[in-house]
Amino acid sequence: MSRSGRRWLSLPIVGALVVFAFAGTALAKAPVKLGVYSATTSSGSAFQFKVIDHCSKSPATRCLYSDTYPTVQAPCPNGQSGGGLLNYPQGVISKSGKLSVVQGTIAAGTYIKFTAVFKGNSVSGTLRALYPEQIGQALPACDSGTVTFMGQRGS
Image 1 (tube, helix red, strand yellow):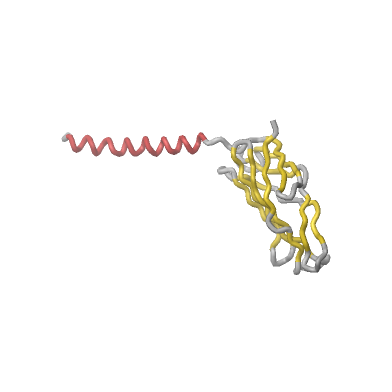
Image 2: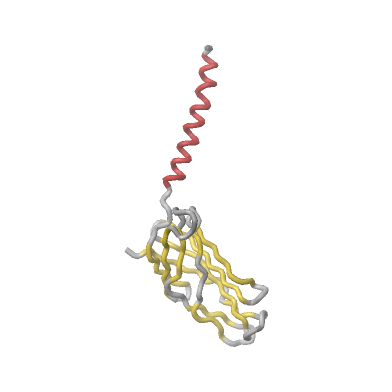
């Protein structure tokens, strides 16, 4: 075998080692930490939720379950004040630590969106809620606008 032949044989081996190294790094990434998280919205309302495992068909899945609810203000187009406790949606957290859950539609005037990003023991995200201005009516709707939140996992 010529010297150049050996070089060609070693390139696939080096390539395979690089792929395994990257795969090992991705697999070593810690999943979202389990436990109770306490968060506070940008308007000062506190709430809690739990991150649990084994909540779907995949045993490695993490899910967010609401524990307590934040209060949001949702000004209405007619000048009245809307809002109240926001019963935000629960959902599956991605392997990268992200969650985005939507219920309803903006066009229907009943809409809730909850997003979260988990990093270590911290979480940050947004929520938004639209409520009908009048019962049984879609639009116009009372709108909380986008409210941010930040929180920590309890010890």
